[in-house]
Length: 171
Image (cartoon, rainbow, N blue to C red; front, side):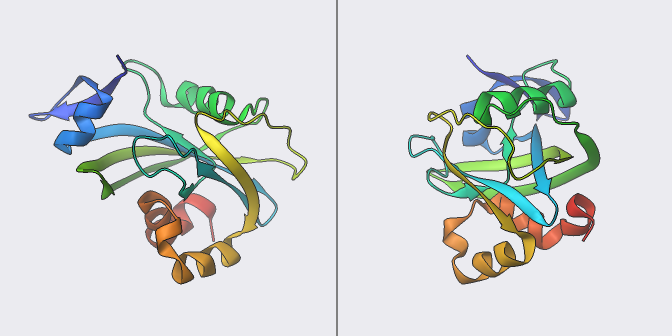
């Protein structure tokens, strides 16, 4: 069972991930944005994900395990999802959002956000259970795509780029 940190009656405690999303409880999360100059690495979520399958998201995101440090979680997930190692992550603060992610599930997250710089030739090995594709895209082009086809992107990516872009990307 995948236990993540969630708040119940104001107290942070370990909870099963699916139950947290079904109940719409506030919980901890981690998001990573990998940049190469003005390009952002985004991923298309695997088709078998239990929520938001096939949608484009930021480089990677997840929930820390109970008692797992946010930074350790971010590095772990870069490796688990994308096979990325050796980047230097920089914490850029926390973001909070709440969004319906379909199938009666809600993300209500307090997200530790990390940014890393890499070259566009970054070595990756995609985990097909997590990610079906990746691509580098300029933030301006991505914002344009989100306006044109918002349904192709996860709610959290849309929120990050419309409400927290300066905090996350500095632009």
